Length: 165
Image 1: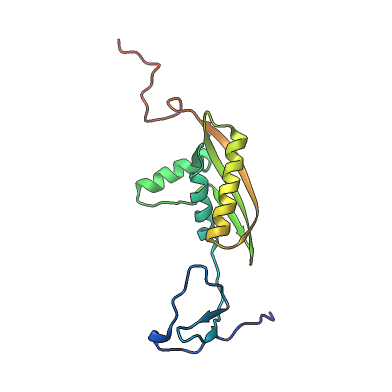
Image 2: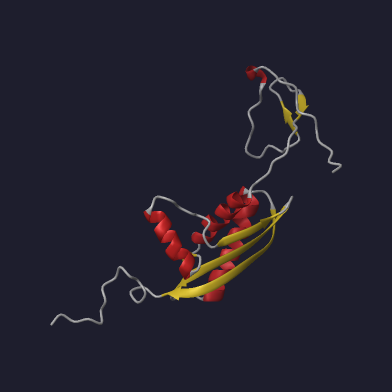
């Protein structure tokens, strides 16, 4: 592998270290004394981190009831009961050097146009991943596997078909 790497910067006393603004470009920094210094190193963002950002963006869309399939949600409920959590349930990503592809499986809420929900999820994920992760999103595939009807398929809601007698 012929990878060209920038040498690491020389160590400097803490009082000479710059403050880094959130939009600071990688590659060089300007110290308080005005001197520009090259920064070295590589950043790797793991698949689970990207998937979590995508899942959070998708959950914020009106009309998304949950992420994942029925089986995945059932396993998630068991995992939650024993103290675990998987915020990226229902999301698969393929992360490359500079690009990412995202697949999302979700359950929509009844009353929301399904293609509209899918389009809004796609837009939210594109924006969230590109802004927070910094990778180019090449595609977001959305699969709606079910529609949640409030009261009908809620295990917590009382069964209205039974009458007290």
